[in-house]
Length: 274
Image (tube, rainbow, N blue to C red):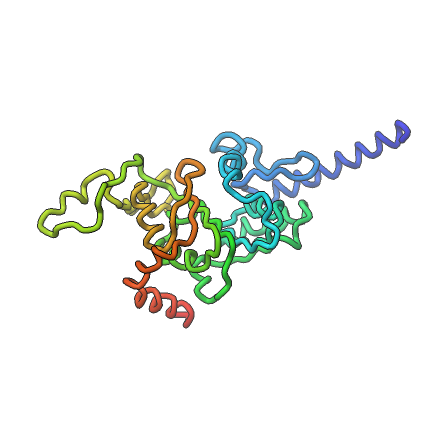
C-alpha cells in the first residue's frame, strides 16, 4: 500500500471512530464500559474505578465453562450487555433482559458494533415476566439485581426453577461472613439467636443506600446462602466478593413444597395479568 493510500485508510478509520464516539455520547450516560472494535470504549473512566465490569469478569470467568456452545443463557438486568457479550463469545445463545429501555438501546447498538446480533437478543421485561414463560436456561446470570427488587425471593424462585445447570448470583450484602451453627429452629420464648451476626437475615432499606432509592435489601452472607438453599440451589463456589456460583440441588428442592401454594398463587396472578 502506498503512503497516500495508508494515509487515506488511517483518515477513514479516524472518521469511523469519531462517528462511533459521537454515537456513544448520544447514547449516554453509560454504566458498562464496553470495548468496541478499533479500541473505542464506552466509559473508560468509570466512577466505580477501573475497567467496570471487566474487572469483575476477570474474577468470575475462571468459574464459567470456556465452551458454552449449545448453551442457552439468561442475563437478568443485562444493562448495556457486557456479560451477555462475554458469554456469547464463548459460544452461548444469550437472552438479555432489562427494564430500562435506555440501557437496552445501548446493548442493541453495541451488538451491531460487535457483530453479535445473531447470538444475543435483548428484551425489555421484568424478571417477574418469566412467570409467563416455560423456557429454561443452562446458565442464569443474576448479578446486581436481587437487592433492587421489591419482591426478591419471588424472583429468585422463578429463576431457580428455570436454571438447568448453573446460576451466577450476586447481591449487595451486609459486612461479615459468619454463619450461625444451627438454624434448624428457634424457640419462640428465646429469640436471641436471631440477633447473632451469623443468623440469616436481610436488612430492609426504606429510603436510600448510596443515595439510590432502588436499593431495597442487604442480606448477610448467611442469609444469601440460606435463601439460595431454600430456592433449591447449592452454592458450589464464591468467585468473588458477594458472588455465588450455584447449581440446582435435588435434595434442597423439598423446601419448595413448604411455600408451593404461595408460589403458584403469585405466579398464577402474574400469568393472569393481575
